[in-house]
Length: 231
Image (cartoon, rainbow, N blue to C red):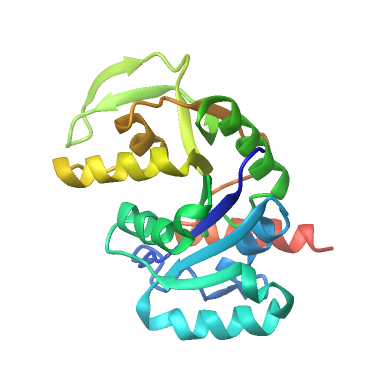
């Protein structure tokens, strides 16, 4: 990838549906944030990784990272994330500064993500200005109303489930987030912010497991995969 890259690891979620913090709670023997951090640090093109966490766990996260990654201390900064996802991305961009041409944004809750997937998405962003890991829809999809009543059957052809990592040129991401803020819009991922700045980007198919830990069942499944991978 031409141009410098910085990464933002989003770990400031409340974990309400899990009932506990999703960033520093141990899964398969290590904090949740450790897996995404390790994948990002394994890519030498990424000059700095900003980890966005809740204020109440910031010091604990700093201590753990400092103890376990002492040789990478200059590449990692732990900050307090914002109220919403887009706020945490903005704070991450501010921490990266203007030196990083590319922003690699990843959810810490996707603990199975590999360096290989991150690199493929980075390559896709180089071609288009923005790229994201995504997965083709394989299930039948129906639209329903608020009470669960079926409205219609949707054609799944061309439909994708969005994942992370997502990589966007820093200036584009900043412009999109600024526009969202000015217009009072909520963007649920970085591709939406890029679209507000006029860049559609491309999707890079994630062929390996890359689930996001949201429910207790996700946690159990991810832990099985992580333990199997460590053998």
